[in-house]
Length: 377
Ligand SMILES: *Cc1c(COP(=O)(O)O)cnc(C)c1O
Image 1 (cartoon, rainbow, N blue to C red):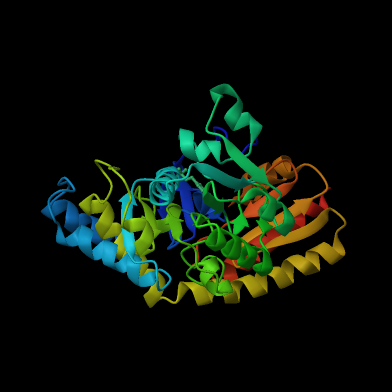
Image 2: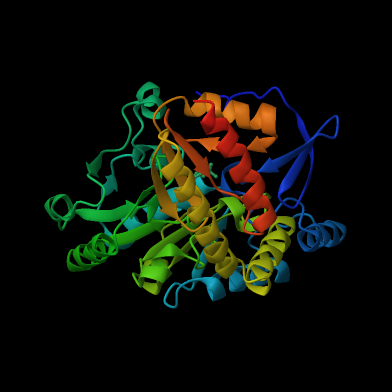
C-alpha cells in the first residue's frame, strides 16, 4: 500500500478549514479530507461549538431513553434525505450503516441473496465485507456471506442476477475505493426497475458520494433514482463517528431486532445536526459543483499538456486522476515537497476528496503542485 495510507512520516496535530498542521506547525493543504470525512473542513467553528455545548450537558444516554438532541439529528437526516426515505437508524460508521442495511433488507423481504458490484467497497465488518470485492480484504476471513458480484454498469448482468430470492442489491453511485468509477443514470434506473419487479431492496451506499460531494446532497437525488435504503457516514458528523441507514417505510416496518450502544450518542448527534445545517446554510453542494467545474478545467488543461495523465474521472469533488504509473510516488512528492495531501486508489489513480469549503485559492495551490510533480515524470 502507498505512502498516504500507511503510517506517514508526518504527525498531524492541528487542523483548520482545508489545512492541517504537523508538530512543527508546517501547513499542509488537505485534498483528501481523510477520505471525505471533513466535508465542512477541519474544526468548523459551529461544529466545535455544538460538540462543546453538548459535552457540558450530556455525553451519553442509552437509546431507549428519548433524547431531544438525538431526535433532532434524526429529523435533520430525514429532512435532507430523498422524499420517501424518512426512517433513520443511527450507528457509528459506514460499515455499520451498510451492515444494518443488509440486515433490514433481509428481514423485510424474507429473502437472503445479496447482489453487489465488482470493485465495490462497503466496509470491513463481515456482512459489508462480504459485499466488497477486493481479494486482499476478503481472503483471510473466508468463507464470508454468499454474494453475487455483477459487472458495474452492465444492465444485462443485473437482469441475470436479480430474482425472487434476492433480498438486496447494494451499489455505490460512484465507486470510491474501486478507483472512482461513475454509474450511468440508465444503469441505476435499471437497478431500480429490477429490484422493484422482484421485491428486493435497492441500497445505495452514499458513504463517500453523499452530503453534497457530487454537487447535490446525494448523487441518487441528482439522478432522480430513489433507493429503498440509503446509507451515509464519513462526513456525517464532521469526523465524529456517525453512520446512518435511512429507509422507506416498508423497510422500517419490519427491520428485525438490531441495535447499537453508541449509535445516536448525543455529542455525535449534536455534531451531526450542526454538520448538516452547515452543509445547507453554506450551500456546500452548489459550491462543490462550482469548484468542480473550475478544477476539472485546470486538470483537463494539465492533461492536454502532459502525457502522464491518462484519464480524469468522477463528479463534483470526488475526482480520480489516472496516471500512467507511479501514483504513490507522486503522492509522496506532493506531500513532502509541496505540502499537499491527496489519496491513492490502486497503483495508478490519485484520488481527490477535498472538503466542500475549498475556494479557488486552494484549487490553484493544488493544481500548481500537481503540475510541478507530473512534469518530473
Ligand atoms: C469508507 C466507506 C465505507 C466504510 O466506512 P467505515 O466508516 O470505514 O466503516 C463504506 N462504503 C463506502 C462507499 C466508503 O467509502
